[in-house]
Each structure stands twice: as C-alpha cells, then as structure tokens.
Length: 557
Image 1 (tube, helix red, strand yellow):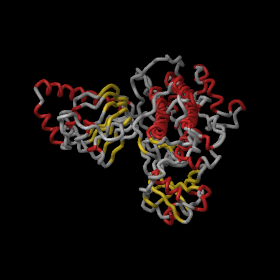
Image 2 (cartoon, one colour):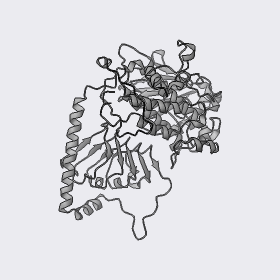
Image 3 (cartoon, helix red, strand yellow):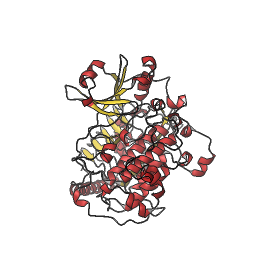
Image 4 (cartoon, helix red, strand yellow):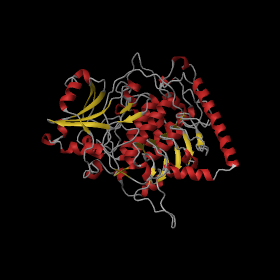
C-alpha cells in the first residue's frame, strides 16, 4: 500500500469524514475523490503527500480551510463546490490548474500570524522533517491499521464498480417493468449518501444552442438561506434589481480588458464554410451558433451575435462583454475561449459539446436516443443550480442570466451540465424573443424587468422538464395543460398526482422519496411571488439532498 501512486475514488457515494491516514503514502502522485459526499475538514496527514502533483476533491462537503495543502508541490488542484472558508494560501495561487469556485472564501489580506510566531516559509522539507520527529510506535501502528482499512475500502469499491459496470445514464429497455411503490416523504428526513455517477453510452447529437459569458469580482460571503419571514422585512437588494440597472446588467465595465485569443475572421469563415446553413447548430434570441471544423480536426462552436445589438456597427460594447466573460470560470459554465471582432462581425468562440443540449435529450427523440436516468437528471439540475449560485452569490455585483432554458444547457462527455449564455443579460433586455409563456416568471412583463428571482423561476421550469419530460409550453396539449408551470405547480405536493406527472420515459425507475424531494424544491422555485422564491445557495443544498438515501436501493436509478 505504501507504493500506491494513483488513487481514483470519484463518483462513489462516499460519505463521512476523511480519515487521517495518508502519512505513509509518500509516493502518491494523483488523488481524485471528487463527486462524493465527504464532509469535515482536511486531515493533517495530507501534508505528508510529498509526491502529490494532482488533487481533485471538488463537489464534496468539506469544511474549514485548505491551509494543510499549502506546502504541497501541486500542478493541478480542484477544490471547487465545497464549503471551505478562510483564505486561499498564497502558495497555492501560482498552481497551473487551480479551481476554487463555489466556496465561501474570505476577501482582503489574510490575518497575520499569532504574536511571536513567524510566517511559515513555503518549503516542503519543513513538513517532512517535523513529521519524522513525532512518530512513535503507537502512531506507526495506527497508520498501518488505517492503511489496511483504506485498502479494504478500495477493494470493496472496485468490486462494486465491476458489478455495476453495465449501468447507464440512460434507461434500458429490460428495466421498464419495475415500478416503485410511491410513499409520502417524511418532512424532516435527512440523508447520508450522494448520488453515484454511472457508466454510460452516449449517442452523438448536435448542439442546439448558445454559450457563456460575463463576470465580476468574487464576493467573500454567500447569501443566507431562504427564510420567508426575513424576506418580508428586508429592503430591495440585488435579488430584486432589474436588468435595467446599469451596474447590475454590466458589472466591472471599468475593468474589462480582453485576455482571450482573437480568431481571424477569414479562418472562421473557412472553418464554417462561410457560415453555411449546413453548419448551423442553433439559433437563439441574440444570434446563431455554427460548427467550425479546422483541418487539424479541432471542432469549435461559434456564436455570431446579431449586428442589431450594436449601435452603428460599433464594437466597444462587445469588447467590454468579452473582457468580462474572460473572468468567468466555473465547472458548470460553458466558458468562452476566444472571440472575433472584424468588419462588423462580432463572434464568441466556445468548446463544441458533441452531446448537444438538454432540450434535445428531453424533447427530441430519434432512433439513437435513450431517456436519461433519474440520477443523471438530478445531477444535471444540481450542476445548473451551482452555476447560478456562482453567478448570483459568488460574483459581485451579482450576475443576472436572464435566459434560463434547457436549450441553453449543454452536456459534456460525462453528461455534466454546462450553462450557456451567462452574462448576456444586457443583450436579452434589448430583445423580447426570450419572453415566452414557458420560462418567463409572472412578474416579467418586459425583458428589463428580469431579476435574480426571475432566474430562479426559470430554473424551476427546467426542473419541471426534468421531472415530467414535458416542454415548458406545448400548444398541442389541452388548454389547461399547455403551460407546464401553471399545470404542474398545484400538483407538486400531491403524492398521487406526482407519480402520474413523472416522465413516462423513466418507466417508474426512480426512488419515490427522491422524486418527492425534487418536486418540493421545484415548487419553491416556481412560486408566483418572487420574494418567496429561495436563493440559489438554498436550492443547491436542497437539490443535493433530494437524491440522497440511507440505503443502497437507488443504485439502479
């Protein structure tokens, strides 16, 4: 076990705290325990991983600081989407690949060391030597016992993974005959496990929609959890500011220098066959998206912004937006990788996601498509919720999206969700194309009336689509069922009706309690009164809980 060089335990429903048993794993170079439900602080024995160069612990529930990692010589560190607080050590800020979003970091200068104590220099050897002097026989015996226990866990997990290797993100035909008894949800029931990512097969699909933008500065504090009594008494804040507010719609305007690659127009014309209709991937309210194929095999998505959004062909506003977009970084956001602004053409360049949009998975069926499993649907919703939490509560000033819909959510190779068109609110307020009866909150009579709580409502409609498989507005349905939110909202707390509302494509393959929890969160998001809708940090917490179980009977969902 002391010769272990690589450890990968991601997506395995691990919970509890991390044991302090890494002292002897000095040859470990690669450690990935991401996408579990591990809580507590990081153990001090992580300091002893002197050979570690890659550490991925994102999407867990770790708390406390990450100071224990300061002296590790890491090249790749991802601690995103946990509950860390305090300051990011200066020693870690120069790491080549560093992801820290989705935590509650403090801002400003770190506090000085206690009186009489000098600041610790960044040397790995100091930790190694202090470790040598303090190990007794009892400690060594304890470490060896811990290593043996860890080995047992790894063997058990590998065995489990092998048994479940035939699992899929998609519903298989031979499972459809199993249906679950639907039982009420205990109001205070808590859970201990997170949903497990299953292996999958993905049929090639096409990207239907757009991509991501804008940012501001990181804020130190996350917003508090939703409380109806408190919300009634607080004065209007960023959550109720409209997109018409200049600071709200276009933050960091004074500091938006472009730090992205510029793609020459002639190269983009060649790669898209001069923006031919055969390369068209989708069309949204602010422009069209084309597939760009390069001779070396590289494939990109190019969003061509409608020229009507720019006064007299001026590109000053576009340059400001691109500069802000270059500062936006989150695991669940489709990040811009380049731009083009030449001869009146303004374009944004993004990674091409071969799996296409969530809209296609839910609403466009073909001979190759299969319905998404329940666990995958919850994980997609959680990813979008985290992206919105980042925009609303981490970015400062808060960043309105203004066009949340399944066609603006793309899925990567592992079916993780990426939210597109982030930060394009200043474009959306000039267009009424995104004002439809499906996603638009009741209070939004014009684009400039959008607020953060309007985003929450639209996200709730996306959750309804994941739950029911229905479109947000479907004129082919009976009149009272055409608007999904209006039809579904009164039934979300009716347990008998909820089972009938569930997407038939799921074939009953879902944990009934998880479905009920998911519906409860959805009901909060689509409330008619914006002041009663939760903040996205609360939504993230509740969605995480929605698919947790105390038993292992949900592995097939």
